[in-house]
Length: 127
Image (tube, rainbow, N blue to C red):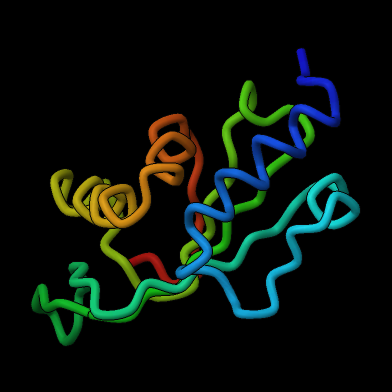
């Protein structure tokens, strides 16, 4: 099941416009850009505490980068989230990974909708 392309474009444009402060300055919100799938969205969170493991201790990092990969079936298919900066894996500390997602969700209501439906995440920097 998919949304008609014109409705999906409007939805993506509205959600990404609401979160524009976390996107690169040159992020293209044109119809051509937002209807080419998979859509890759780079997100930067600055001055946002999130737990990481460094030298065997849990510390906090205040700058985070992640990539959302949104498929043509969005919002019925969950986006993939790839963390570009180190985070604690959910398996290690069950409360810490959801806190990191909550931080992003609180920063931008539109992303909270996407993040609430995420089932998959990956990162080469998971601890």
